Amino acid sequence: AFVTTGEMLKKAQEGGYAIGAFNAENLEMVQAIIAAAEAENAPVMIQTTPGTLKYAGPKCFAGIVSRMARDVKVPVALHLDHGNSYELAEECAREGYTSLMIDGSKLPYEENIALTRRVVAMACGLPVEAELGTVGGKEDGMEAKPQYTDPDEAADFVNRTGISSFAVAIGTAHGVYKGEPKLDLDRLSAVREKVSIPLVLHGTSGVPEDQVRECIRRGICKVNYATDLRIAFTAGVKKAIGEQPEAFDPKKYLAEGRKAVQSRVQELIRLLGSSGKA
Ligand code: 13P
Ligand code: ZN
Ligand code: NA
Image 1 (cartoon, helix red, strand yellow):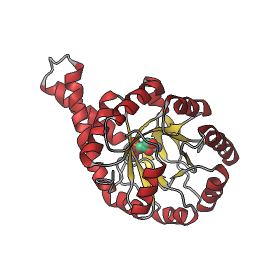
Image 2 (cartoon, protein in one colour):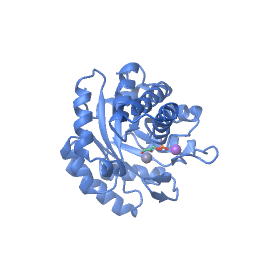
Image 3 (cartoon, protein in one colour):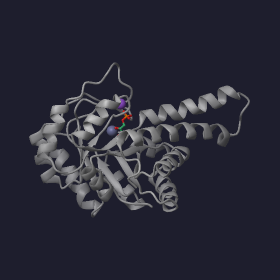
Image 4 (cartoon, helix red, strand yellow):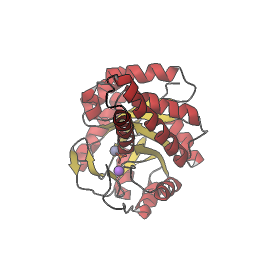
């Protein structure tokens, strides 16, 4: 079923587990994520960054995901990840995305609030995620110096914007970590005390499993994975081409990438506790 995210996040919050939000880059990754969700009987979110939407636009992803989601029982949502302009958020809403993120975290505080408020108003009830503080590393080439979320500011931000979920900055980073990430778990708990809407963890590829579980225990109910799936897909394709260097049919070697992504997504769904929650 093609759904919005309000209900699945609310259930996850009440049930003490998290929804996997998986970044897709192409048809095969969409197929893999939906197949994994079906195999695990789990609700999922598929998300695309602005960079991915430059490769293939919102029309393309909304068309593929909405059509495929209608043919399965499990809830599947389509989310704009790190939306970087009002215009892109509007275009995604128009094309059928069921959830939006507007990321004004690099703007001065009041400008972030103003932009987020405009997107919430435009979205007419579609759930909107926003972020305060910054997740480290690169998301589509935007290098950010990490600045952790302040719990009091978070409460003010959520009240003044009317967003439906909130991305915390507690020491995770996009991409591959050099060494083990040090997460500020007490800060996460402090944000949880002040903010009642669903909390989102970004940059989760590379975070050790016990730390992911601890974040969920402390109130995270949406967990984002991008890099892990890009790595799995590429490894699958490389393996296929390595084994058959004379291969020239894309559907054959891309199928190996798809298989690798499906198996990684199934593992992650189990880690997040959303297996069987559809
Ligand atoms: P990773 O690439 O570290 O998994 O981060 C994903 C993310 O936060 C997408 O918004
Ligand atoms: Zn992110
Ligand atoms: Na990461």
